[in-house]
Length: 330
Image 1 (cartoon, rainbow, N blue to C red):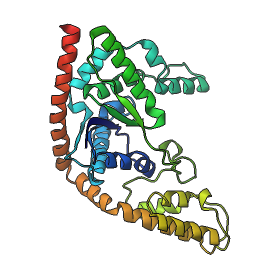
Image 2 (image 1 turned 60 degrees about the vertical axis):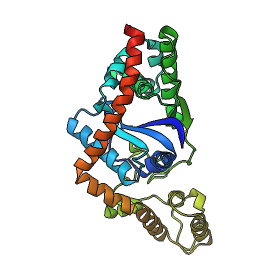
Image 3 (image 1 turned 180 degrees about the horizontal axis):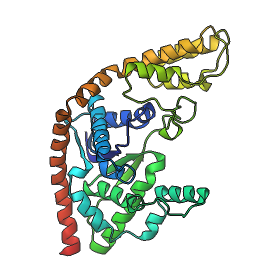
């Protein structure tokens, strides 16, 4: 156990898929075994795209239930709803006053929205609300409010932590040393997690396998994986197979070697390979899925965990806000 604080957030925008699990959730759970972890369900971050409060609330329960069902160490992890800690609104507002507009103009999320509008021939800011535009400030407030030392991110999210460091630097230069400088930790590349069509598993491509899908739905999804036209008798290259690439993340080294050999020597059809993959994934996730379903039927247990986490998070947040208010307001 180290004394450094790891902070991470989960945006509640729907059921995570197996790409999310392999690339982010599983490493997060492993990290929490040895690192003091602050994990928030980022419901405020969902508000610039989801306008139905019932949907946001249900997705928040889903995200929390998934982490609990997967076995996150709650003795070493503070898990809470972002919106339950009122100091986040305060710090977000105060940081607005030291954040250069030019920094927001460079945000990947804003630039992506602009590029999409330009490609569609509409006004450059069409559909862009201030929640999207100032998203990095709220993200920075999340990081700085709890004194995070380490923020695990994917390579495409590194900018969020860099912005938090920039904003903290601006604040400290004006008001004196107030905030820590968080460090991004780029997760180990687990390789491209392929979806049903072989492209990167992504909701944007509609090619995902939902993490907590019921057993029959999971099997149907796996049976829809696109393959080539080789017959069962023909040799197949496992490295070019979506089935094999997914299998590797759930099997032991001997099992992986044996499955690869079954591809290469021929005599195995893709239907058989998909069944083997289904059995492996279903076996790995079935206990967590059962617990997830139980928790979603007993949301008071989720509330108890989130409320307890929020109370502890508020204590940390209030100490930060006392320093910030003293620096800015005297």
